[in-house]
Length: 459
Image 1 (tube, rainbow, N blue to C red):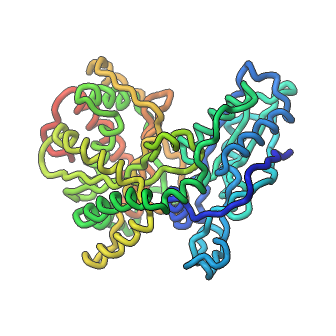
Image 2 (cartoon, rainbow, N blue to C red):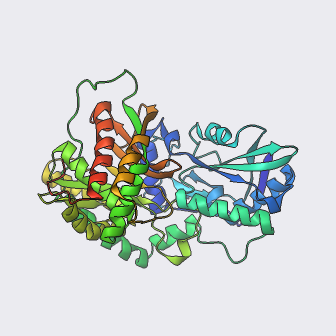
Image 3 (tube, one colour):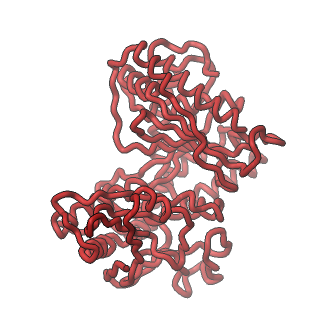
């Protein structure tokens, strides 16, 4: 089974800033770069049923034709492009020149047809790394029940879409199923974005972001998690582990703090996470890299591409209580969000120059990714309700692997049982018992802060 598509003429362009950032991350994580695959499951709307396999393939073909990122692979720059003549060997982890993005005009995407569980099919399709040069950046599955398609499964290569880009693709797919077509021109393609970023207007944005990175790199610790544990305690196995806490108490507490102090729940979580990271590492300045969606421009709001990048959040932890930190965090977060729309080549140059001046490699290796799509604040939960909810908290260890390009990655998700906070860390720098303690301390700090001022310095 295949999805056939035909679109605009073939074309090439340099990588966008977002593509360049994720490509660098992929190379440093390979061969465990399947870590960055992610998927979505769409239940076919009732008004679009019955849906045949053939009709589903037609609709999916229209989706791929509309969004050029879904038919864009990595390849070599055109012959004669300055600075690229030494070629690109291809494949994750390869050296040589930076690849370019290559837009195909026609092709066929393989489809897996199944009668099983759609969530399981999504996981199966996502469990192997993409071939970035030869494979289309979209994997598709159709789940058939009683002779008709009931669910459509999409698995994205992170070079083609980020979380918000995937949501845009699913929204367009639903509309195509219901209406048969989409009104208006498509949003900018990654090739359009790359050309704007290379323009004078794009360089002005990049230069402003670069100033923030340089200022921050001169005052932050060179690396947050800089102490290596010779023999990490815990069971043998790969050094990279993920601990996942699901807490309704933390969800209620964070909403209450955000409502009382007039800020977002994401800023509350970023502040608390940074304070505890400083406590664990012993640094009195915390450098955290929040993942930012970068969809501030109206024409990119619905683009199916990868725009998310890291910003630089710098928070002084000298004395004061949690309220003082939260007050300082709000403007620091805004600066971090603006710095996220940057050219990674500028950041690399700045890190190299400042690192030589300081005599140390500069990289925080400390990330924060709030993956929720909506923010809800509510000051109504009372203290007994929140404390009773602590009894429902669960902590699991869902992932381990050999390599990751970071040492501390905190992911926030909305879960049916409350707030999901996952910590993926290198146990050579943060052993498993310390990971578990960090998550439980984060929950405790936020529950306390929801009902009284935490006057003592955090940690």
